[in-house]
Amino acid sequence: MFDVHVHAAPDVLARIGHDDQIAAGYAAAGYSGFVLKAHHESTVGRASALARSTGLDVVGGITLNRAVGGINPAAVLSALSSGGRVVWFPTADAHTQESAGLPRLGDLDERLDRSVLAVPPVLDEGQEAARNAEFVLDLIAEHDAVLCTGHVSGPECRWLLDRAQARGIRRFLLTHPSYTVPGMTPQEIAELAERGAYVEITAYQLFHQAGMTPARLADVARAAGERLVLASDAGQPDSPEPPAALAQLIDALAGEGLDRGLLRAAAADVPRQLVL
Image (cartoon, helix red, strand yellow):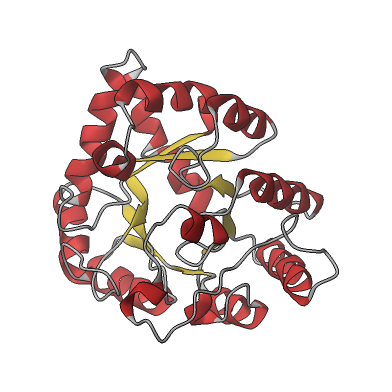
């Protein structure tokens, strides 16, 4: 098993355990590795230290929120040149996050303004931010890294896929596209999966997304087909331990009639080959 999406302390938000505790849980559950994600800092150094100390394949990356300069080619170059494998487009600072009333870094201190981040087609493609997005895509292509869409909108996901495929980027993952943000439908998800995008479903959605049900997640899984990736997105104090969270997601989807072998592959071989 290989989990492409987990959070650990230290972090801006409370987490269920520190890096070493999360890694120990995966080792005890027989995982080969995992991807460590943070919304507001690079996890490349933390992941490298865990890989050396545990023998697991622990992978880090960078999320392009305001704390790292937003859609910042310099931060991406630094992360990928240091061994990072994953680049997430904006999450907590995406314009969708603000409009949906979901947590923002600015929630911690009212002195921080509520600026938001976007990528084309929301932006004028002549703007500096649009040029930076193109530069980031060039870097992802050159390093054969994984492009994750973060919390950007459905149209932005399509734009990213268009530009990624024009550059030959093969490792393209829609970050929980059926989550509140971007809130894509199974039909929209199927369209992008048919074009080559991988599709993530997370245990977090099962436990915390308002109105989400196993049946709705099963519809997304069917839309994804062989491009399905299952992840925990766990680490919250009110979620199960990450390996248990992912196991519960598999059980819930299997209960909706999906093949358990396909589901296990979506939490093991498929994500491992996507990332490594």
